[in-house]
Length: 141
Image (cartoon, rainbow, N blue to C red):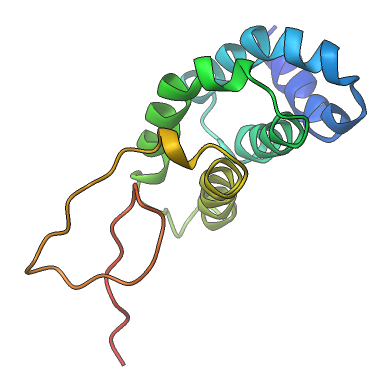
């Protein structure tokens, strides 16, 4: 049963851009919680992250208002995933982090930035421009 859900999510990602706007808007509140719950059940998160990002891109492209209602749980799940260390023994671990960053980027650059929390600057921690939710350290030459 679980493998069927994963296969459906993997297929739904690329197909989400083909779903009519009103149908996508109607289904987002059902689709996102299902996808987010897969992170807890599946040991390999890359296909989930990839499909999630494609669905987010489609949702944001049509100006989905249903997405905003899901934003808190979406950001909490994405943050938990991005904070997990990259495992060098898992070839898709780096790809998963890239897809997670792409999810943040889609949300931030396409009309959801007002929902991101504002963090005060930390004076002793130098930062470079980055996602407002993820502090970044400067690269050391």
